[in-house]
Length: 576
Ligand code: DGT
Ligand code: MG
Image 1 (cartoon, rainbow, N blue to C red):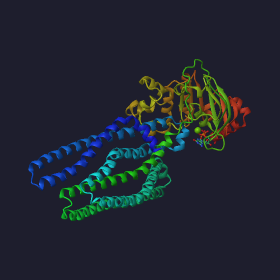
Image 2 (cartoon, rainbow, N blue to C red):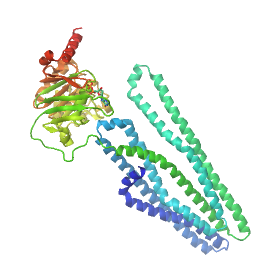
Image 3 (cartoon, rainbow, N blue to C red):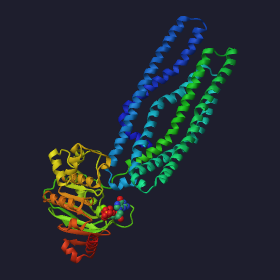
Image 4 (cartoon, helix red, strand yellow):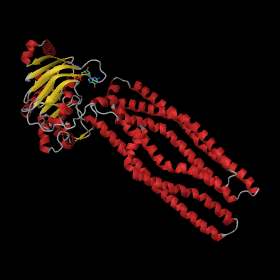
C-alpha cells in the first residue's frame, strides 16, 4: 500500500525528484572528494613546504565546498517542496474520497479516525518521503564511494571498515528494534487520548450535570499515563542511540589512529592519508546510521499508508450514475414503491415494504414512535443512504438515476439534528442558495419565524455562528435550518421533526407562513405532535418500519388503532 501511494502521488513530481537526485549526486561526490584533497595538501604541500601547492589545492577545496553547499541547499529545498506537495495531494485526494462517501462509509470509519488518518498518518508518510529524498542517493553512494576512496588512501586499514560497519549496524539495529513496538503502541495510545478528550469536550455538560468529573479525569489520566509511559520507554532507547553511535565512531577513529600510527612508523602510510581515512570512515558510518534510521520509519509509515489506503480504496455505496438525468419537465412529486432498508451490519430491516406517493402541492406527514424509522425514511430521498429494496422516485425518476446535483437541487432537507456551520447567519443561509440576496434571506427568516432573534443579535445577518451552531438555542438552530431549506425553493421539502423544539404557537405560525411558499411543492413532515399534522393531506403511520396506516387525520382516527393510541395518549397528556 505504501508503494502504491508513493507511486500514485509522486508521479506528478517526477521531474523535481530527478533534479533532487542529480543535485544530491553532485553534492555527495563533492563531499567524498574533500578528504582526499585534504590528504594531498598535507602530504604534498605541508610536508614538503610547497606554499603554492597548498594555495592552489586550498582554492580547489574551497570551490568544491561551495559547490557542495549550493547543491545541498537546492536539493533540500526542492525535496522539501516536493514532499510537502505530495502530502497536500494525498490529503486532498483523501478529502475528495471522504466527501464522496455516504453516511454508511463515514459511519464505518468514524469521524475521529478519518481526521487522524488525514492528518497524522499522512504526515508519517510525508516524513518518510522527505527523508527518502535526502538519503536515496547520498546514502548508497557515500557507503560505496566512501569504501572505495578509503581503500585508495590505504588498503592495509580496510579491515577496520569491515569491522566498524557491522558493529554499528548491529548496535543501532538492536536499539531500533526495541523502539519499533513502542512507536506502534504510541500511535494507539495517542488515538485513545484523542478519543477520550473529544468525548469529554462534546459531553462536558452531561459530565457536569452527572458529577462525573472525577471519573472522567481518571479515564483521561489512565490514557495519558499509558501514552507518557510508552513515550518515556521509547525515549530511553532513543537517548541510548546517540552515545552508541558516537562510541562506535570514536572507537573506530581511535583504532584508525592506533593502527595507522603503526603503519606510518613503518613508512607504509602518510599522515594525510590517515586523516582522510578517518573522515571517510566517519562518513560511511554516518550514512549507515541514517539508512538504519530510515528503515525504522518504513514500518511506521507503512502502517499509516495502510490506514490511508483503506479509506482511499473504499468506494461510496451510493454511486452516482454515469450519465445522470439533470432535466425533468414533469413535476410528479414523490413516490415510494415497496421500499425496504437495512442498515449495514444490522440484522433486521429498519423499513419494510413502504408504499405511498405524495403529489406536488400535497403535504404528507409521517408519525410513529421513536425508532420507528422516520428519519431513515427521509434520508433515503436525498440518497444519504440507498434503498435496499424497491424504488423512490422524484418527478417520476428513480433517485438513483438523477445527477446528484440535480437531485439535491430539488430537495430541501431540514435534518432532525439541525447542524449549522461556523461562520455567520448569512453564510449558513447561503448553503441553501449561494447567491441569495439579503432580502431573500430576511424573507426566508421571516417565514421560519426567526426574524425576531436574528435582528436582536448584534450584527443581524452577519452575527457569528459557532461550529455546530452551539451559540444558538435548539429552537433557534432549527429555525435557521428551516430558513436554509426555504431559501433554496426546492420542489420537495423534508422536515425531520423540525418543529419539535418550537413552542406550540410558533409552530402554528411557522406552518401558516409556510403554506403559500410550499403551495406547489411536495412536503414531508415528520412530527411527534399530532397537533402539527392534523391538517396534512395524508398521514403515514409507521410502526417498527412498517406502514400501519395511511390516510387523513379523520380517516385514521377510525381505521388505524396505532394512530388512535398516539392521539389518545397526547390528548391525555394535555388534559392532565
Ligand atoms: P426518532 O427520531 O427518535 O423519532 O426516531 P426515528 O423514527 O427517526 O428512527 P430512525 O429512523 O432514526 O431509526 C430507526 C432505527 O434504525 C432505530 O432502531 C435505530 C436504527 N438506526 C438509525 N440510524 C442508524 C445507523 O446509522 N446505523 C444503524 N446500524 N442503525 C441505525
Ligand atoms: Mg428521527
